[in-house]
Length: 570
Image (cartoon, rainbow, N blue to C red; front, top):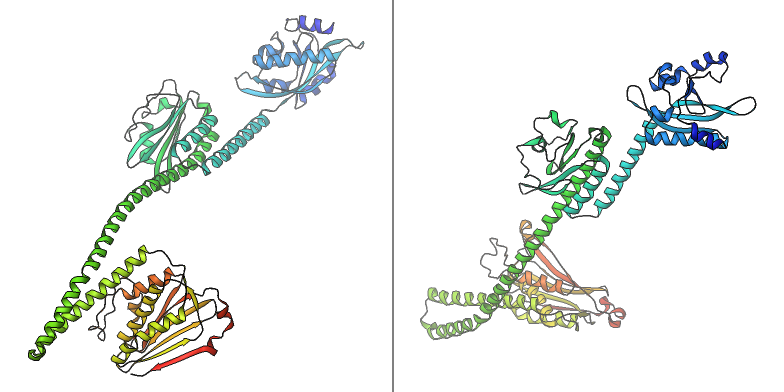
């Protein structure tokens, strides 16, 4: 029955009746800080205090003579329905509503947020006669809560953008992610992002319009921002003489340059039909978003550049590899094919010298010596070149050999050379086997090169000491001499191909400059390390270490107990 009565009467104007509160309370009600109201069962106001009037911006007369309720004159349709349903619920259930929040428009058309309570007023016989309630202005609280919620939403969106950009290296995807976030927060109707690469500016993505104009650094707000590199928020584009419309009806514009590492990489532009959408908070968010966008775009550009450079390097490497193969083939052919002619030259040079020897003057004999030295040098050069070529093409050996035996045999091959040069050579090699994995020919060449160098650069009366030692895990081979030594500034270039140290003592010593380079290649190919030390005018020590292959013999025999010393006098 109550529901029917309420439905029939709400919204029907009636004359103003007296307040339900006793007259002696009116002054008190007008003094309290909260608003207070009373209505009849039709929802018409019959009493309001001064605080409520101040909240709404209306006078008491304005409100009491309005002829209708809250939900008719002072709020919008949505809030009006919520209020009407609330009054009906209180009337039907006879239970008060302690708080309901609504928004109203004040007399100055400002939006205010009010929190009101609703309860029934009854006669002494408990018959309902109207409604009353307390009203609080919660506009400030609502504004703060809305701002906080907006800020939290912005921060959450920024975190999401950060997560997506952290694993993204494609410029187009970076732009799409950031544009979606910008449009979502700013509620912009149109916008675009443009990138700058190699002096050209082009639109990567446009939203809300098609047929975008060609960007020009000399025109419009976009051109101004590109020149000044300063972001701009234009609250009223009609007041900006540089503004160029991409679509009619726009009110506000945000334009931000995308700068990373002090370099312009692009520009972000947004426009809206309602300038209120571009609040200071939204502008701040767009600036933060633009910073992330610029960094991600810069990374994407760097990655794209790196990819292009890698492709270019791969193509260049292919070309260089082809040239290297051609060069290698030419060197190998030349080194191999010139050995025959050199052999013929040496043979006929020897025959001619033998036939003419009784008639040769010292000067003419020197000519034959020069020919012999030149051909010998060319033979050594071709031999070294072919050895290097063999190293590059040959697969690593997996055979096991006795380094002790190998070093002994190679060292003894140089005994005659030492005697001819009047150099004392001492060989300290243990009797026990030292197994290593490697190629016998290559290791022989490395050992021989070091011994030959020591003999060649040691003057008459000097000495060369050859040593082999092991700690059962690695073996060491070294050649020490009392030769000319190497100046310290020259030592860092020793193992470069074709490099030869030239001092006043070694000017007349011939060589190819490939010996030490070849030794280093062989040693490193066998998993070893080369070492040396030298003092100019005192002598040098060259050697290398190799890993020892697993062998019971090495573990059971002491190097000191089995060491053999060979001494050969000049």
